[in-house]
Image 1 (cartoon, rainbow, N blue to C red):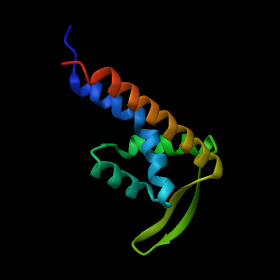
Image 2: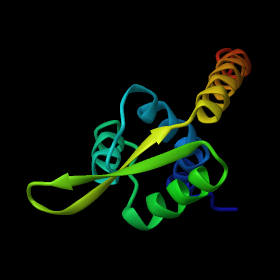
Image 3: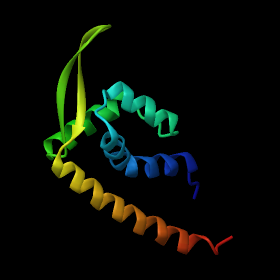
Image 4: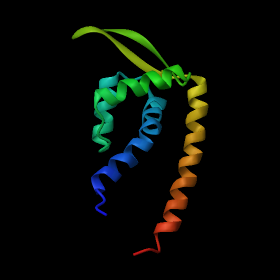
Length: 112
């Protein structure tokens, strides 16, 4: 059996992408291009084709809203922000992440 470590790494990143996006938006309203840039800076590579459907899904779930803002360099831009429901959901994800990270550390720290 030949396991592809790159595929596993990609699946791990995909699993936490929603959490990372909500966390980024907890600090300020962001344009999708800014979200992609910040994710890339954190080595969370994502493309527009992945981001836009995810933003739409988060908006449809009531976690995000957006506003249009005029741009000096082109058409108006859509800036996303967390809703109160999104902030509550992010808090739950924060708690879950802490529990998950502790469990992973506990089960992997003593293994070679």
